[in-house]
Image (cartoon, rainbow, N blue to C red):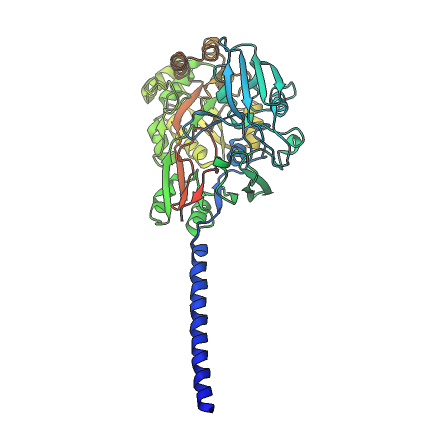
Length: 510
């Protein structure tokens, strides 16, 4: 009896153990897909921390690189191919004379704080951007607008003073983002938009965190990530270390081309070289001697070996340019041969301009690696024609904006202009180049007076040729987009038709 009990008990125990083991294995098996499921958060690195988070009140591109198309949206948008697409305006019509734009607005859209989007909100945003006290960095984009009308909640009508052939494109820019009346004043630190991500927090000097917007109006375009963190890492070695350690999943604009080869050896990382609108130019103060003499500017251009600048400043990554235009832009003309590298001709032209023994000047160079390296190379090249350049490192953006951009207190500076199709900056008054050319200005006006792409491209070619000849800035090269990210990350933009980090399509593949 006892032995039977023992054996039965043992058998029962064995079955129980086996059953528990099977149950455990089933639990583990059931748990495995959860363990292997794709991640839903992303940490993205940026070299420059934005000064604020509202792209409608300040110019630095880093603002839009965090918030544009993530938090904020516009009536139109620019897609990854640089094309205009509908967004908060689902469609529009343009009158035959080009002076009346009627937008049909999306309905059922709300801001992250629950405010409804309608024509009154769109009017508020546009009037805020174009008003007398506007600080919008692209205020001129709205200059052609005469009146903004709201016949009903779903209709917005813009009546223009004169045609503006680029208006739909401009309305897609970060600076044209639609903001809500109740929250607009606080968007600099706590941005509230209609986008696929909501702002969570900003730890100054470190990071900005966004979270998926569960109430996003565009279900087809809803974010696939639950969380996105932007980490700000200025030092190139630290950027590489963060990528290798997996502390950062992606660096869409990696700041150290000389380290690209070392990252190519990492089996986990992909290196993606795309194109950008980043035009590196050494701007001269055209109102100041000796840069007020076109011959001096032309001589300096002939003293520059563009390929040597690219090799030395950006490890050979880049495309030489002869004007303020990139090969991506419509109507591009290669003008690098207008004043090709020729130190002897440069010396002769300097002598003709009255500077046979050269002259001295100061280069105010931002602290970014490309600007410092390019300045040092230019310094050596200009010394070959008897011109002495002193390099003064100028903190970017604050001091550079105050001294150079706003103050005009400089001889020469160097910066990468990130805005697409921004050749019109040479027609702006004031602008830091202090370049004045009525013929150039007229050409730019004609561009806006027509909506015919072929006519616009012909005019853009004329404008490029004038700049290549007048040389208000030394045109150096277009920086590529050096992207480095985890191979399992998909959906990031490989090219950059507009400065951005659009995350709506980003996801992990496994």
